[in-house]
Image (cartoon, rainbow, N blue to C red; front, side, top):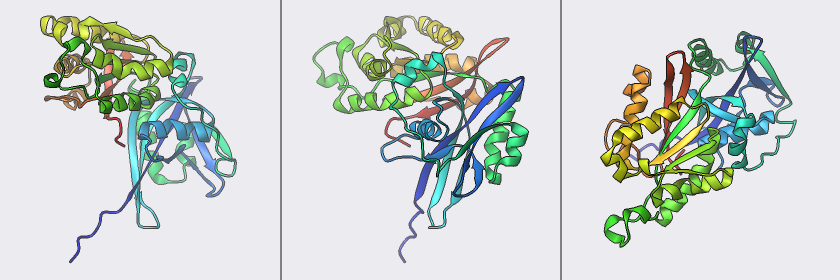
Length: 325
């Protein structure tokens, strides 16, 4: 008997775009005239596109607003009429503002959808939104968003920790560690990081001084038109001498007000992760990478940081790798 093939999964992504007006939490819903329903802005992931890029693109198409993603929210999965399954990934998001100009420069322009697809965008308070949503399942991410707001975990910024892309093997390289370069695959990974970093509004680029790290963030820095901050303290050599200096740099980034990426090396990651864990909720700290290699080449760990009276708090994390959904 032939094995039963797993159903094809259609990946989709979107966001719950939120704002606060006169002390009231509001969210944006879109109306689809074809189905006469109210839902979150979302859509299918295009071939070769990441779920992150799909989320911001779909929101821009359906709402005419560029957004920056925040904490991840519960997604949905359900059966389609043709036997396939659809998996929808959601994030909290806010309409991009002036601090996000660099990230927006790194994105391609997005034309709006036809009014035949989306004919209304309306902001509702969350109680009204829960009633307006057509699908019962769409209320699950809304409930999570409301809980995050009530607990001070919704208004966040991103600190993205990136491991450099795939580099030439040490045994194959005749030069120094300072200038050991990325492979062609590593260069592809670096280019693939551009849409990942732009979705989180990254405006500050901080990197180890070694070539493989500088080259990993160079495509994003160029696309966003920002100058990378090259720090020798983030190299393997400096870290082996003084890991405390690396920890101090990570803490400084946690305390800043903008979105940033820090690119470094595998041996440095345990120190970076330890600082994040010290400033994270227990459940979040327990879910952080805990064993070597911590991150794969060009993989990123996104720490969503809320400012509290006691200082920065990592309230959620997620990992992404270029080329993966």
